[in-house]
Length: 118
Length: 459
Image (cartoon, rainbow over all chains, first blue to last red; front, top):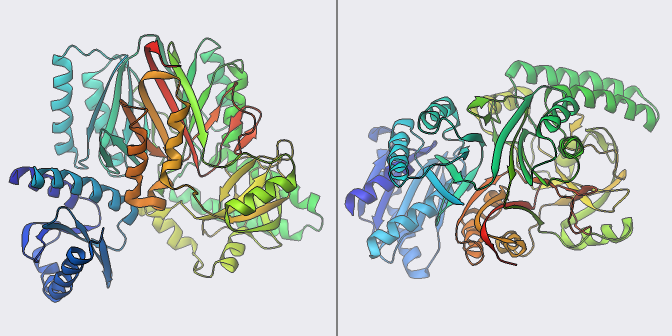
């Protein structure tokens, strides 16, 4: 299962404009992370955003949201619930084709969802 | 007919190749021996089209092959806007691919039609509605736009202005645009008017120099038309999401007013495939006046976007042209671009000079697009050609279309591309998006279906 999830995230992380793909546990603990850029480029941003992401994960869980996103400079953070306990997070450049990415993320969520709930 | 889908969502060629080869190996071991292939690349794989071409040619050298770049596809219960998908089929009847290259649409289509003849039951044609050539060619377009616009402004009467637009249209046709109505007209006439034609009139949503790519029998077509012709158990279906058209100009205007958001009647000066002005302003300037969110785009920024593949060719605003003869409607999107005289993808001469400026609306939601499956006649395998506008309009809501199709179509491939056009000699005459007799298109909200039947007939 782990290698299958890893492959799905790999595919998604290679999308043009995607900087990072993370599968979070609902309490904010990252389970998997795939980076498409050097670590040092996004580490400060991630550190700074940690609190906001945790808050959004909490909102997704308690408000039963389908998705949540916010923009930070030229970076877009998108969070999509995969199962009751996992959320897929994507950090992408604002130039990435958001509407196309939306569909690919949904497909990836469904694939991961099948794996984590089976 | 046995049909198999081979696909990979991976954009990286090496990884994608390994997925594809694994699947192809399985198919060959099962004794699958296809006689045609439709190959669809996406924005993520189109740069490697030569390598994918070689890969498939190596495995299936003798199939009749047609291919192009699309915006996305649904295979099984997955939807992807990346990677590559191919439909391979063992068609029970006759299948043959023809193509013709050239810059003159009438010559190309007539030559192609003459070769195809009248014997086929369905034709799937691919052609570049708008071809994005080199940066240099675009720079020339901007210079010509300014020159023709200066002449246009210098004319006093509407008739004189229309003469300038007609001349400019010839330039656009020779270098950039294959008017969709002309392709359907010349192709249907030269094939005896009895064969339904699905037009995949291609214009990428994120345009890049050299797009759209069209492949026929593993060769690049460039500017031209390629067609897969089928004789046997096939059926062509067309569907638009709009209500029936009116019986008069006023009635159709009323239908547009009640369907579209913020519809406004405007006066245009147009001729051939060029629109000179809307309410006295250049079309793009009119758009910017009406929708202040649009900033002026300079030529350099536009060309940079085309080179980087980031030029957005989708727009929620446009003109609804009303036919003088049928009172049907064809939509033309207006893209924020650095031109004065606006190019159209269809000939505008058969439409009123009074038309409607409208904002995009898809009433009924994504499920409305799936209603095409209710018009199915055969059971077997279905190739749906769906308007890619649903991707920006509904995002992941596109899944609802695929789920709604599931009831009627168990075995299918859906491709998302620019709204398709159709010529069909036996279609309901009250269709909203009628171009001219038996021909249908609108730049949003149209879908087509090519059904491959088994021996059993459903209805």
